[in-house]
Image (cartoon, rainbow, N blue to C red; front, top):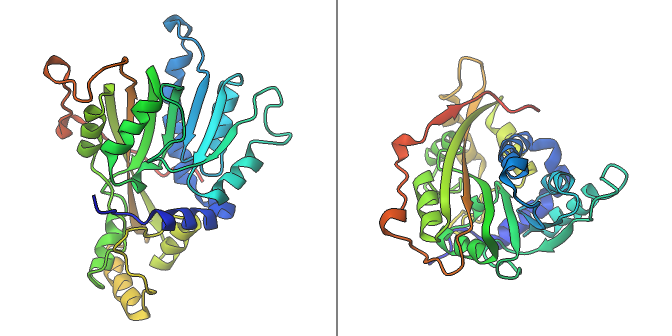
Length: 308
């Protein structure tokens, strides 16, 4: 498969953004909080489940999710895994010191690619990933790797951006030139199919749609750079976007300005939960166990802006 994304660019962009990421990532924090709510299920004493021993925060960024996971399960070995060395340096600072639980184990930091996790087979109880997989083009391959490291009955819990993300920005730049300026993200159907093909049990999918406002195109572009969400497509234009192109995109975007006086920016978020299959389970289960997820049955919840 020809790479869709330039993963070296992904690593560079997020390393550069590490220092200011937390101050600008309100949406990412809100999505993480909603994803974390699903973990309450594991702590239900009525289920009789033992607390997890190994928890992975994949795409850990500056480590706030890692710290929350370690606080939830202080005796577990929590691993913060990220492709960007700069993000892991931030994670080290954010999971240490007097603000962190002194009685919890210290999280481990691993610089690694989601496509090749350096973890033992069937060693992970919980694999948590918040807004990381939109930078992976081969979902079946990466999910096969997740299945390899997840224990039977281990929990896979993740979120990613869907294709509706930044649709307004994509449309505005399409009026300026034919080069790709906004990364393409997988649809919820592709996501569900890839989980099923990898053999995960009982996948459940949901999605949210957030619409944020910006005073102008420049403000949105600066915010995207601050959180490292730059265009990382392999076929992106390598030269700077000229003033004329930017002006044409800004003019096209201006036509979308809403009644509140803001330029809209839509973020589609897909959530997925699934369980590790028993040892020896086939990749495609088939027959009675084969699951289909009709798109029209997945409700889109429209909510307000996440808290700043």
